[in-house]
Image 1 (tube, rainbow, N blue to C red):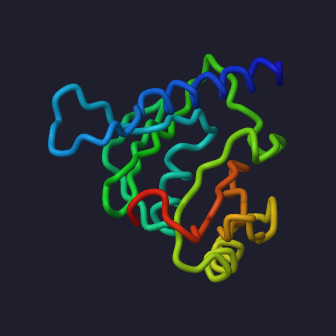
Image 2 (cartoon, rainbow, N blue to C red):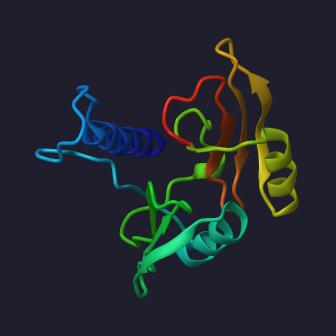
Length: 163
């Protein structure tokens, strides 16, 4: 069962990465453009999770749906990317709390990793991997939200995307 969940998650994340496409250097053309819109997570409490992310990470609800799925699309403050949180009763909700955070995590760029860690621990997150600096000079920490989903916060030495 656990191996099946890992394979499913890897497949979903692989599709999301492929959907993001590659930058071929052309600018100004939207013809044939493919852009990552959202990544979906099957979770036990989509409404509560969306509320926590809005209150603590500055996200906002873009669309919501009724029970039983209680779907919530939440976006970052600048509406660059969304997460879809839903509960699909026929499928088991993955045991995020027992997964290695390197199998799946949601990464957020922040200005201050230490302050973000302290603030979110107070808000109910738990520590999965403490602050470290990579050989490239990036600073990161991995927490778990109150539902066990791994959330990474990082500051890049050299940004890879706009922030």
